[in-house]
Image 1 (cartoon, rainbow, N blue to C red):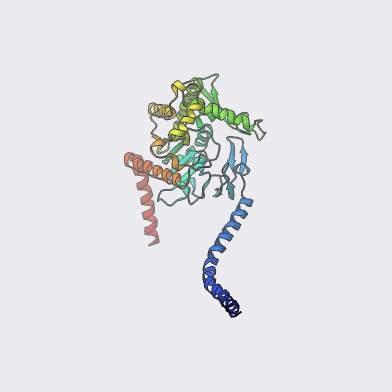
Image 2 (cartoon, helix red, strand yellow):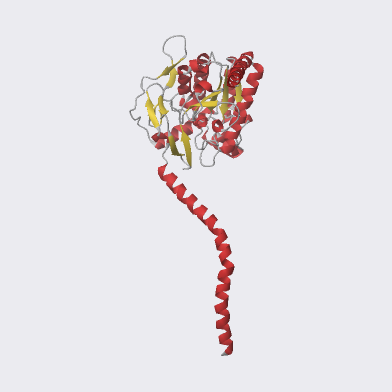
Length: 371
């Protein structure tokens, strides 16, 4: 009986003792629990507000589509579903840097646009001492980028122009009159004149282009099976690419320098993924994962346009797992590449040095006036 009373007393004393001992632990954990809860809540709210990129574009009769101007939006990256923050200027180009005040203008597609990353991770959104303005949007082909170079030619005077060419689909998309449901400019063999190719835009309209997701996947696999082999389709794609590089060189005649940079598809960067490319190949005996780089480098050399192979910079771990775009580390590499090209251009070009000296002189005069 006495033992039973002792047990009751000990139990009664133990409960508050345990509470007293556990309370500081719970109290210390409360901030972490609150942060986790708020993070989860904020994520759900952002996901609810986020939209896909094709809800942020407008029809453009010259090039098919552009991002809407003066955007501040949350965008959902497909297919991974990651949410990222973006903003556009008054012309629909990402970021606040003005084109007229930039040192480097980067033309390209979703890689130039920074698809999938916030602006603090995007190569053009970081502080580097060099002013970088990307001009591009998801889904663009080389054809749209050449048309933009023509339109902006007067703004490119004495600027370094870097052209990102994504070997994963750009070469093939140049030949297609649409990208999914969107009508896009393309090139076809010329029927007249001294040009072997011509740019076609007369079909552009807001009207929906009939397509199916299954057909899109089949077309993409056919492209992957062709562009890395010697065949009629790849030869046609490389010939069209040469024509477009020629047009870009003319459009950028007044710029400091035009530099072509290939952005490799992640499938080119590991043995396992190269094996999948080989499986798609229509002519395995001629399969070469370096073929696009080799052909673009050859054309650039013959046209006297500087060329940089992206394979010397980007590796497989620089890409997101869920899609084929750069992660934060990949954008760090892109910035490193651009700064390297910029340094070499300033070192090799008397015109660049003159431009830089003019800018320094203007800055010095402003400082003197302020004093």
